[in-house]
Amino acid sequence: MGRELLEGTVLDRNANFMASHVTEAGFRVRTIQVLDDTLEEAVPVFEHALSLQPRFLLVTGGMGPGHDDITRECLARAVGVPMAVDETAKQHLQSAYRRLVAHGDARHHEINEARLTMATVPEGSESFENPVGTAPAIRFDTGNTIVFLMPGQPEELRRIFQEYVEPVLKSEAPAAFRAIEKLECPGRDESTISRMLHDLSRRHHSIHARARLHGTAAEARMVITLSAEGADEDETKAQLDAAAKDLRARLGLEVGGMTD
Figure (cartoon, rainbow, N blue to C red):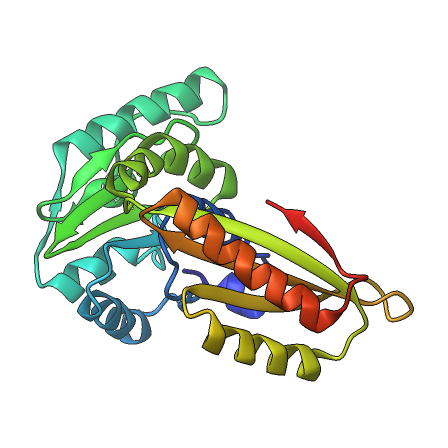
């Protein structure tokens, strides 16, 4: 969340970081959205996302003490629960500000009214200490969905994600093997490649294929990524190998393969 992302004044590195780790854990990212810092716009998006019943909903930003830090309230309104001061979150805040005072980054460690907003969370939340910054992270379970609210500062987000979110992702990961192969061919004709990949998907239903243009205008090349998922590793690899062989034949013998 954040108007600065919509204005382009801040680069969204968090989305890239989380998407890659979520995919690596074996989940499929269904959507990535950037929301403005207004309840009128953000709450309906929260409601819609939860209506899709994803296993996880990961939200970053809007967790500070500012007037526009509304992420916690957005979630509370979307799930229909009141906001309340969480004593665990308050303790995490006190520890964080003592750390800042010790480092000379804050004048006092008392939890005043502004700071207390960071410990005021949707009732029923579980709070996690922020090992780098101040605002605690939040977990809230609703239906089949686990919601994590995390600070948007990249260093804070990464530490919190790795310590609290990633272990849960891995424990919930689907029991499926995932195999990837990349093929590279010269040129920039995406329309031709697109027709080939559409035809490939009809013949190999279990294969997901996508192409992306790389390089400069003078040395353009298409990188095609084929991926397959399945419960059996040998069968999944065999399906991927068959599709890659098929595509190589269509593209020509000069095409090489790269494995991930």
